[in-house]
Image 1 (cartoon, rainbow, N blue to C red):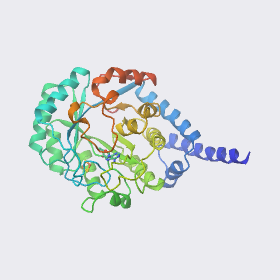
Image 2: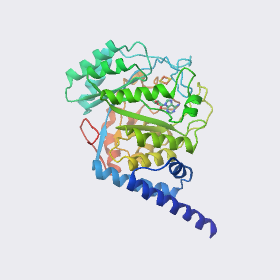
Image 3: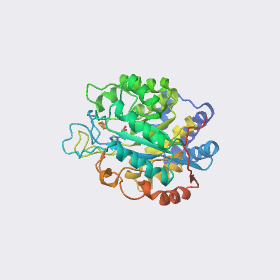
Image 4: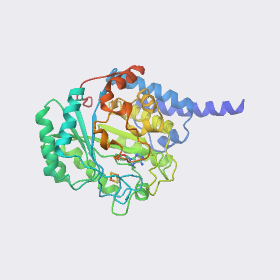
Length: 358
Ligand code: 5AD
Ligand code: FES
């Protein structure tokens, strides 16, 4: 059967590349591209089981949690894919007060969270003074917890002040490491150069840094995704958040097809093999595109879950894309059912700050 022969030959070629990746933790751009472009269900299964084994070697059965607090849906930027871009007049805007944010963290603490991710659009309301006050209150109330920030591009001075106030981690997805693709996804005033400047400032200041990229977004090719893998290999972030692109109807990319869970999970496995200690979160976008997306991701190398601690009244308004999961098991209050789902894939949620393994 020539067809089967062909596909098994292709699988064998890819298997050799996967072996090389496991041994050297590094491939050329062309090799990454081949692995991505020639994905087959067989290679995906092989990759997932190897990634799962590597995660177990490093982290055992532990899965870390982070309590996500979405503090503001105002944003001064206009990324073409994003539902809360400033030019989206139909986006529903909200902003939590400092008190509300601290209250979310207190509730999260009682639920067993030991790290809080404060995330928002680039909302000028959140000046350094405002953020430093909030960070200070959370750290004072819960000295055993880590505070992670995700407020986009800021100056080096600002990152320094926030770090001095007690924020130890910062999430800033690079979105795509391909300069040409970056330009197609962002308005002219944004640049990949500044994004990279931010990431290297964060690293130099001493933050644990989370980079990341979207999968299956408009115009993206296997060669672009290969650039992302090569960037991660070189930058070695502590965390890497990846999720499928999902269209939001009121954005310029509103009628584009979504990325797939299969490709996202495949890339997650590759990342685990490239960087065994990497913190890899199960993203809401993956859970949105496929009901058991996050379980599949957990079985293929992920080791972090980030349930939502934002007040229920605002959860739907933080609408980066359509159909976002915002009730049920992504909610922090459902940590019990989430634990059971994580146990189904042979892992356990732990009460821990969840630092990257040194
Ligand atoms: N689909 C999927 N992910 C998106 N993000 C923004 N818009 C979308 C979308 N339409 C991601 C970006 C951003 C993160 C907070 O959410 O990668 O960094
Ligand atoms: Fe600012 Fe999406 S455009 S958060």
